[in-house]
Length: 258
Length: 258
Image: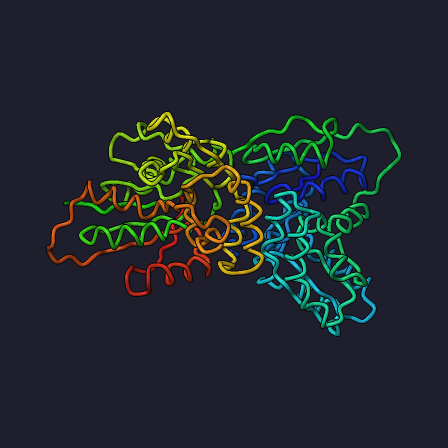
């Protein structure tokens, strides 16, 4: 075993993915890169997201990583794995789609995400490639990221916004919903109010399971090293790192230029 | 007269400023740069906004501009005019503050803006420098840009969000409100519902008046040339250009790399 696992996200949402990976793979070291200067990715064109994705992966290679996880759904949806031959690069689309297929009983699955993720229809493509009888419904929820970034997880306003986006899904009888953005797990409570009987698929959990299969964890002692890099070191990012990762579990946040 | 006037914004909000300038200065040509790849600026750190501002001004110099208007309030709030000696660079803070001082009768003025603009307190500084007896109240409204970008100008959700941010201003008896972000004039109707007796200051109108004083317009015939550049050419940007500027009034939108 040599080298850390790189984790990349457009900003702070991917910290929940990093946290899941740290718990699931205690023998591994991690380098997290949050592209906080250029976030959010969800409203950008596929060409621009692809350019930023490539720059970020190239940048992470300088940190001697042995694999890279693209935690951001918008970036994962334009990821062409075959473009990166030197080391494995995993996105969250395929693992999320597989978990949804395991969960659904009536073969009706819904996907929510940013405009970029939904317009790429990459979850639809993955689901229907894995099971051609699956019926998929999509809904872009562009206001979810801003309300999460405002910390309004439990607020009457949030309930109204969630209802506005998700009410149409009540009429189509889906039994499984893919939370296609790293911010969305923070809205599980209001989402459950609108869709109480629907199973929610959280990609941060799924990707951790998948990586565990690739990197079996021995029981030896290991002091996990976690480096956190960002392109703009805002107070909001620092607060989120302390909240999600915990103050003692990582080295100082480092600002980098890409 | 030689050279166009450059107008820079973090994205599409500044198109309303461009439109005002085009009407007020019919003898002038314009080059508009929307930094759509890196928007929004309102949640970034002052250091990063300053870096992007400098890069964008340097870039516009390649287009033989004779002056530059920084339409974006977040960028204007970190603008140091003395850093740009080759050509005049105007922000929107000082003109907005001057217009508010002309409008207020009870000398109580409120400013709303992005987190970046409010934390810089540049309107407070400008207002109190111009009149030390002025009382200023500030309120950051981080959800206003996302709701405007979703086109929810007239929506029950928008009324609730506007009420949430602006209700505290009702108790402090301000008579003037500076709309400290290029997106906010699109929310005039819901803002008027919460603050019906308050005068709203729209920086796009004020800056046009100021420029007219610098560039007196003759009555000669002139076919106005308007170039529109952006760093990410999204469908949303194209739609906004057609809506605000009108399809026949500019040359093709050009994507540029900065």
